[in-house]
Image (cartoon, rainbow, N blue to C red; front, side):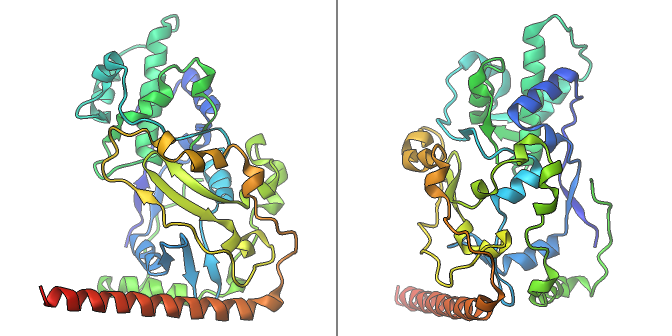
Length: 342
């Protein structure tokens, strides 16, 4: 099986002005990622170990793991400080909206066609700003927030880029190209089972714990921050979506002591299906406020990871997973009985 690209570069041409604004917005490293291939069967295999109530992977012989804020910073180059990507989804600049949107979405096909044979005029500030805005919109839709079509982006992002020369548009928290490889495994029908079996064989000694410690000093300034800023229990917010990041459940990833029974997770989060007509910043005011006081949501743990606790921790996790599966099956059986009587 081939590795299929899931993220691709914008098709519009880069210019020095574009790079300057991408640096200001904290997106310059995203454009340098290139194509990001993904093994779909491996992802489906990983999905079998995902627990939505804790937003972590539960690996039987390793414990809980997740994509941390540190991973996002070091791999994507995205800052974890600045404005939260949320607000009102009904864009009120009708003139700008008419230029971009069709049915409340920005269409990249239209943008590419419009700029295909246009020469940029260095002295035309309005034209340069418009081109930079279009480029950033395409980058967001191609790399960070792609939809099923790959050709559109909700108009709510226009509000973040309304005035590129205003400092309020800057400092937004957006939270080597691999070679194409062939999947050398069994037939297609059993590839997901094969991926699951491979994941089941993962042991703690197969994982590089604390992978960024040795490279922190040579990273750009955005990554040279206090490592404890990544060890937080905080909601990740994106307009109508709120998903919690529980660093206190994956302390082994930071080479810190893992409490056997970490605090209970919050609500599973919120993912709205109708996002127009609401001010999400106001609706999630308390969650947004947490990002303004990161010290308040830090996980206070200074003890190093101890292998002595590993067996007890894995036993506790196995019991918790067993209870969760029992409750889940019981609920579905009750549901089936209820449906049968209708």
